[in-house]
Length: 479
Image (cartoon, one colour):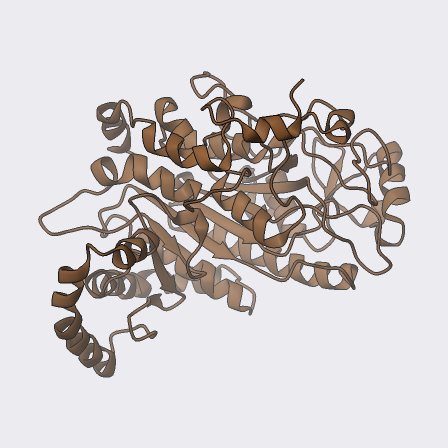
């Protein structure tokens, strides 16, 4: 068995270190694009990433309800444990959702407004991994590689968005790399002088959507983000944009080849021209869609504004000539070292209401079969309370939602929640992951249109967990 030091020091493609990741990404070819173009010619698809930054305590989101495992859960969580009877039961399983999530349970169960339409599933015990960890002892002995800076917010946010837990010298995200392999040749129905990126962020620049060639288009709840920092088509903004277009067009063109401009272009695809195009279509869609959004029951919260904008952005995909889109939305504040029960209940209630209204809107507009929404977070949290909350840990549980989801399932391997038990690596209940973020992302990317021959370009570690050429999905949460 190789030591952790030996593994991270290797530079072959079979054992990718932080230096060789860049080389691997540059050298892998984009195969079978003619076939991909044919595949993309039909259904339009969107991936919506909801990033719960701060580290959501998801072992209080998805909780065992059967007597034996709930007793283990209650013993481990002590004063943070949720009563068995308060959980929202997930039909056909021995699990329940947090009491603040009745609407997510409704979408899981296919009841109420979603009668006959199971739109939610859960994935248990997933986290950042470089290679599979066969058991707790392998971790404790240091015979497996582990992610860089494992319990650091900054590093783990980056790793969830890049899917390269060894770290990267040149940052790119798995959404951006997906855009690299499917966007330019196949995704855009290009006309002369027409180009719109496929990655849209409602939360500023995000590593998730940075590609080697493709950038992200940063928008706001009101539409395009202009160079003035405002959006809209008022007379004042029109005048500003006309002046700026005259001032910057030639210099940008002239100096684009310098390193700063190339780097900026790789990160963001915003421009005055794209902003005008996007805003025009966004505003045109509003008159038809606003009534649907108004009746969907969005809670009064800024996060609702982000998701309403996401609906409009998806709805105008045809006008933007896009077959594929990714949308990034960040919901921060989950670092609950104190007052976890109160704060998490409030925030989960907001998330529950917003996701419910978002899915209702997609259903009403006929977009539900084309949109897959999924959560990510920095890491899970310790099972044991620190007195009022929980501390940084590793594995957690994630949620997937949408028409493509095989709803009503809890996939993955739910761990033992016994403190110092077989799945706890120490320090008060840090659970190690049985499933990698790569497997999670790969299943969605297969649906999205990334070909098996391109999957390592997007997810450099994937073959350690799964053969991209397999006929079966890695985890089985999609239809």
